Image (tube, rainbow, N blue to C red):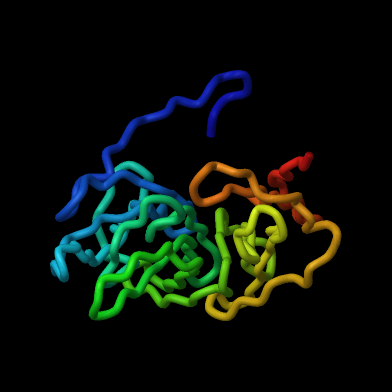
Length: 231
C-alpha cells in the first residue's frame, strides 16, 4: 500500500527478448494470479513466391507473479503466408485483458494461401486459460477491434466495423462485441448510439472513429471512443 499523499514509485522491467524482433509489449493485463504481457508481433520470412516474400507471424507472451520478473510462456499465432500491405491493419495484438479463468487478446490475424496475396488483417479475438495455449475466433467481416475489457459477468470488445470503404457512400459503425466465455462473440445490435460519422480520407486505407475504451464502477459500464464529424 502507498501512504496517503505519497506518489507511487514505478520500476521499469524489461520484458526480455524472444527469437525474432525484440519483445516490446503491446498490451499488459493484471489478474489475481499475476500479470501477462503480449507483444504486437514478430514475423519470419517463410517463402518467396513470384518474387514476393511471405511471412509467418506470432506474438510473444510473458507472465510475471510480481509484475517485475517476466518469464516467456508461449506465443499467439497471428498469420501464415502473410504478404505485408502498404496501408491498413497488419496482423498483431492491440490489447489484452484478464478475467476469471483466463485471458482474452484482440487484434488482427491473416491466413494466406499458397500464392502470395496482399490483404489487410482480419479482426480477431484469442482466448487462453493459462497464457500458453491460445484459441482464435475471427470476428465479422470488416471488424477492427481496438480494446478488450472484463466486466462482472462478461467480456467486451470495442472497435469499429468497416462496411465498405467508399468514402462517398459507405459509413462505418461503432461496435461492441460481448461474450460470456471469451470464445463465442456476438455484436450488440446497431443503433443510433453507434453512429460514429463517416470515414476520414487518409489518401490510403481510410480512418474512422469507434469504441476505444470501457470503464465499470461495479454497476454501470461506460464506453468511450471517437466520432468523426462530417462536412
